[in-house]
Image 1 (cartoon, rainbow, N blue to C red):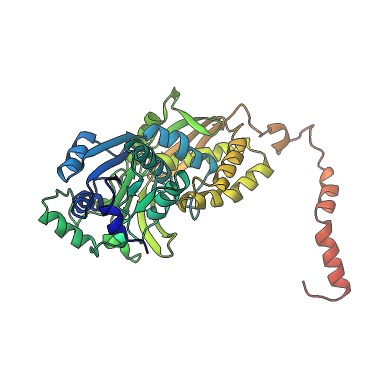
Image 2: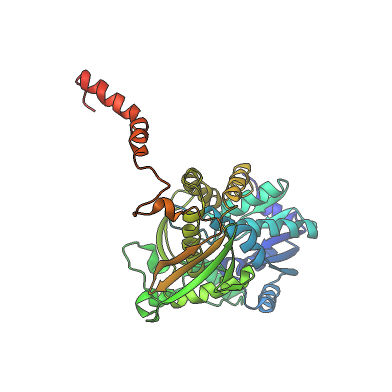
Length: 413
């Protein structure tokens, strides 16, 4: 096993993926105590960092020598989250991948700054139990296999959060939360997740009044329903309620609207990549509306064979994202397939929002495959119903032959 203490002592400068949470807050000081001469903190902003100046001040107060706050919000939506949306990718058919889909871009940012700063050591604050350690390290290794990744949680003396909090108190490191009251959270413009405390027991009902930050509990949501209209171009959202919007403005507005109506609360027990089950509560108001609307538009514009095959690979696409395999050939190949399926997914979808529920309120597209002349239950001049007889005979011929054979030989089906 590699001696990471020796790696740190022999390294002049390291890049630290920095969020300002508990782990990375103490890690700057800890790295300096363990021989690192320069610590460069890199924070990725996906819409969650409200005050980059304050975050930089905090990092430098604990010993950081340099600080970068990368503004990645629009790039995150345009190149990562919206691609997951186009794929209709949901891990285990429910999780909208809010944390997982952000990690490849974080990894890319860390590698870019490492190259800029002239170092080949990157440090992250992920624990040995989580998925993010895999996502970061696979991404970094695929982008630059010569970089050494150091994960202090795997070898330092801290055993849990209480040890870290005690260390922070001894070193006057400010923490902006209470260990007894605050959940472990991950936030970006796509979602907000909550884990830990009473959620660690799946038998406990989630206290939504205590947990939720973005979404109003459905029973407390406004009493008036609201219809939103989302415009898509080749599977990507480009407009809201008749107004063309950039990705960040569109998501910000949808999060606010969806949150007001109690949309996008997912209480999930998921299968972590490292083998254990994990329970979390996710807030995805805007993303939930987009997934719903996009699926409705696909049902109108994507022909059956392509749509059915795409539905099969959506789970595979989601697993690749969840498992940190964004930079792989398979993910890129599937992305090319997804892009091909989206050529005609252009149009407008109206969605009715009311107390946690969504209903379609109208779908239109210049590429609609719905033809009333064929679909009508009234008299038509384009469809000969007698054609169905021959179609059914041929379509079911193999099954009929098997049944006849079994009947002749008295074999049970």
